[in-house]
Length: 251
Ligand code: PGA
Image (cartoon, rainbow, N blue to C red; front, top):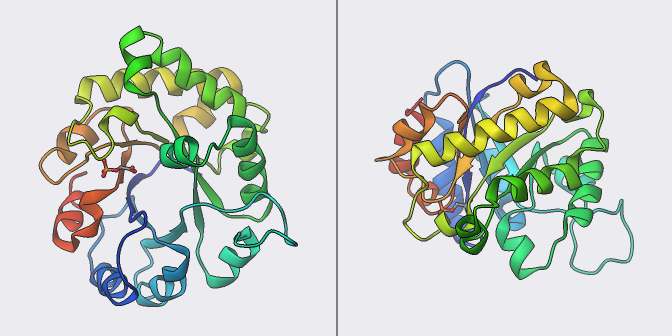
C-alpha cells in the first residue's frame, strides 16, 4: 500500500444514530483531493448506517473502533472482525490509548488483534503513544518504539505494508494541548526509522503515519506539512462536519 494522506475521524462513544447518520451523510458529498483518504471510526451500532450513508463517495472508508481477537464463539458482548467485514467496514482502530488505559489492553493482546484484522483482510489503524510522565522522563521515543516492536515486529514486510500507524501522545488527547509540529515530526521520523529497521526502507516509506491529539481545523495544516506526518486521527473535531471538512482539506 503506497503512502497516502489520511484524515481519520474517531467518534468514540458519541452521537445518536440519527446524529451519526447526518454526520456521515455530510461526508458523502465531500470532495476529497486525489491521494487523500477519509476514514471515520464510528460506534459498532453505527457501522451499517455509516457504510450506507457514505457508499457514494469512494474516498470515504468506515472503521470500527475495536474488535475481538477471536474468530467467533462464546464471548458475550464482543464483536468479531468477520462481523465488521460483513457490514462493509474496511478498517479497525486498534490500541487506542483509551482502550489501553481504561480496558487494560496490552501490547500482546494488540498483537493478536492486529493478526486477526490482517488475516481477515481489513486494515488495522494501530495507535501508539506515551503519557505525560514518560514524555517528561525523556524516554518517550524508546517507549513508543517498544509498543511497535511488541505488537508489530513479528509481521512480514508484506503484512506490515497493510497497516496504518497513528501516533497519539496521551497528554494531547482531548486536552486541547497539541504536540507541536516539531514534536510530532521528531517522534514520527524516529518511528519510521524504527519501522525501516524491521521491515525495510521501502515498507517504512510507504507507511502512512498519522498524528492524533487535539487536531483541529486551525492546526491541521501545520501538522500535516511535516514530512513524516501523513495525516491525523481526529477525535473531538471530527464530530463537527464543517470543521472535519476543513481538516480533510488541510493537506
Ligand atoms: P482528540 O482525540 O482529537 O479529541 O484529542 C484524538 C483521539 O483520541 O484519537
